Length: 327
Image 1 (spheres, rainbow, N blue to C red):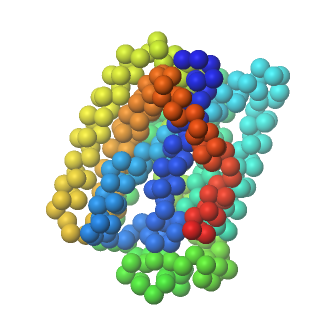
Image 2 (image 1 turned 135 degrees about the vertical axis):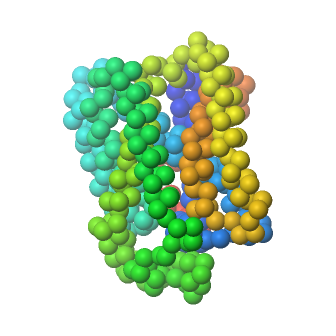
């Protein structure tokens, strides 16, 4: 792979991940399913099922992984230029944290930029560590996250949980489907999001941050191992990982398929664990597949017109939110 193609492959994977994340978040960002509790039937059921099977939990995994890769590249390049790498990265994290909190409060409660910023500080302690320690630590954080997800899932009843009272006034008339008009009572919605941030978000972070740290560390490990620069050398291992992860994903997706077939109304929450676990395996398959695709110059040339679209991942997240709120 040529040098520019090697860098371009990261842009391709990151850009595709962002676009798919936006697609998966459309129901919550537009207010149609703001709390991920709506039951789907008919055509909507099929679409929701396909999103859960092929997109949900797959591409934020890839994006978080690439955050770790990007951290390594940033630190390495900053050090090579003689700049204070730790100071500059901390400044970036502080800006990201402030931006994420503002975005959470004024635009969308589903923001994770503040969580990324908090988790990003942990990366600073691992930058100089061995790749073995980084990989083990990453897997350990992911294991802790999965245990927490299982505990929360088991403690939650099979019925759809009630929406917090401070969101009740946001409903557009149908309290069964819990749709929300994002332009109605905006000041009250801001207060509700701020209240949620101060009272409930900490519990969400306890579950989410270990997962983000784990994915960041796996990305840091991949960066230090120069995986993206050694694709031709590692092609056999990449192929094995590609197809083995696909097989694992298929097995973990069987409960989702069974649930889809046996139920008339489809609730994503009922199969959330399987979406999470299967998502990690399919994310690995996607990464390996895209790495192999980027090795082919013919495909790179076909993807060459995409840079403008892929640059969406480098623009402020609020621009993406505003785009969908206006749609």
